[in-house]
Image (tube, rainbow, N blue to C red; front, side, top):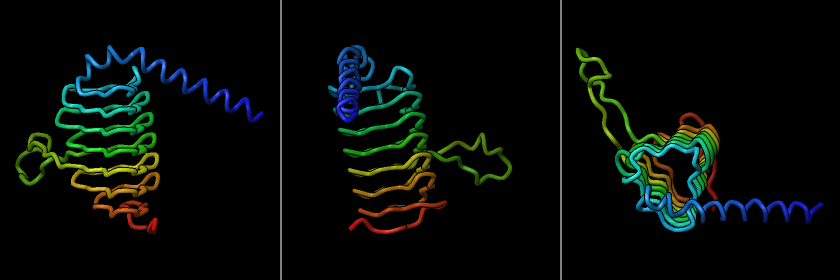
Length: 182
């Protein structure tokens, strides 16, 4: 039984890397700043691919949307799981795990003028920095102007509105410190 699991695992990863190798020339033309070994599912949607920078061995799984109209940098060995959404000025460090359904939203609407509908007041971008080795659980929402420190964990379903210190586990709406990883 155990050997069947190992064999299935080898077959899965063998197919994944073979598929990435076959698709690489096409994706390298489309995404100029993409390093070798990265994989973007054909079912994902990348808007403005020229402003997207992808490191080596990055995995972007199906039905993910990256709105790279401004500047999105994804460093090496990052995994972005299905149904994720990323927009704005976003920097994702090395070895990060982005769970399914995560929303990383770096923009917000202006709403100060009461005589003008909010829709017509424009918007502003705020940077989001996710440092190395961060795990963001399924369905979490990361809002603009946030820095998530190295080695931190964001619990599933959390809404992060403030900075998260290094090696900290946060959760809730809005996200609060649960404990430290030290």
